[in-house]
Length: 123
Image (cartoon, rainbow, N blue to C red; front, side, top):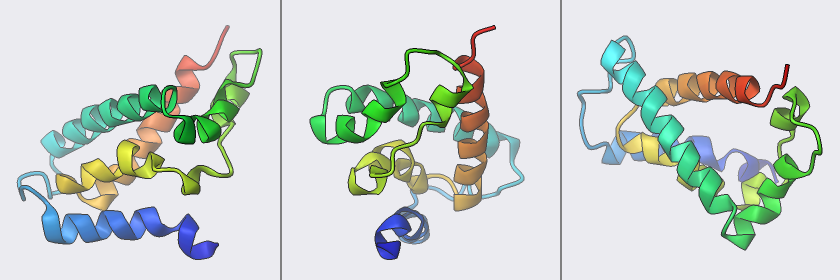
């Protein structure tokens, strides 16, 4: 089970090392690379999210997020335990590996998580 839980990180690093399309965004201190990571990562997450509403294999994992009657921070925290069994990491994150180093994917993931907290909050 441990190997299944960590396969996305290894796949990302392998794709970036062997199949990246350009070195222009490989510098983690580049402002351009940061902005590309944030916007492209958000776009790929959107594609994943919309796809998970239509593909039953992915919906089986994503439905946890939509099971609340309230729209609050706990809704954003509902993460599926079976996500590693779906192709979600291929759609939402791994596509970034063709352009961006793993460090920027982690940065984008953290910024995206903060954004998700913000949009899942009612005042």
